[in-house]
Picture 1 (cartoon, rainbow, N blue to C red):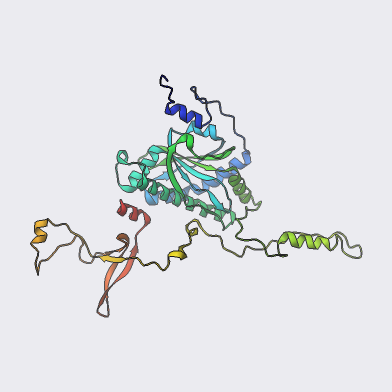
Picture 2 (picture 1 turned 180 degrees about the horizontal axis):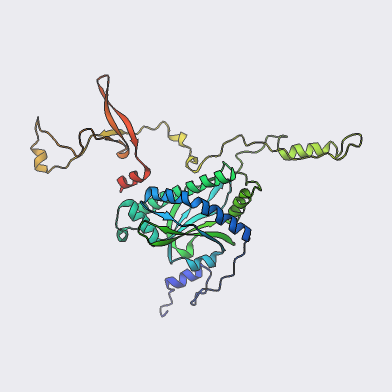
Length: 358
């Protein structure tokens, strides 16, 4: 360039390890076990109905097709991605600890956010509210996947970090550094158009999942504390071996095995990571709203005793229950010893809360 500045394409190429002079360097073919690929693809294919149902719970008639799993590396996957993507980082932190993420084209993320927020897609800006909606969608999908993994492997300790969506150039996507399996889904958001969604597993995560599915054991969840002195499997084994390698009287070699002790501490889910106990004694304002209406200033100034104000709620319709002015539930008015009260009849879903915030 005449002014010596780099174009965005050249910057992206440099960040992705490509040739800044134009064109990306040829990607090295990734390596991976065919058995691992097939096992993971079969598992995800069996879990896709549950994932589709989860997606359809937020977006009417949305669905996911069965994924195709292949091995990739950073260069290979970057060639498949559009220039700008939305990455939902959802690493596993227990069960099968390691890297895990969902990757959407920016246009697909905007379409999802638009449908959830009831906003035209071309008016969606990938800012806090839209990214919050995408994060919530990712959280629901990851939760469904964890349930499927738990049912399949019997490992009840599986958990992930709270999924967080970030919009970024593809060259800055936090992909694993070595070869890794990636599942490519076809997403239908109810309009019949097929859009891509990629799910990336770190190599250690994939290997642990496949080993557990095939009955070879599961990856232990991170320890919450050290073993008590003298009670660990390693200490007990060593002590037994120190007593002698064979039984008295030439009865043969002793078969010594490690003792596996159960974990006494439950592993927290992603939602339990924060210590909510710290805020349990904090007061919050709770109000019950019978209804609302809008009036001209001249109408308000003309009010007096006996004026009837018509609200936007029908007789018998549930009233809104708000905490710090945010809708959390609906209920019906009751009378308790001459005092008004409210019986909760419905807890508002997280999606409805987001709509209210918007």
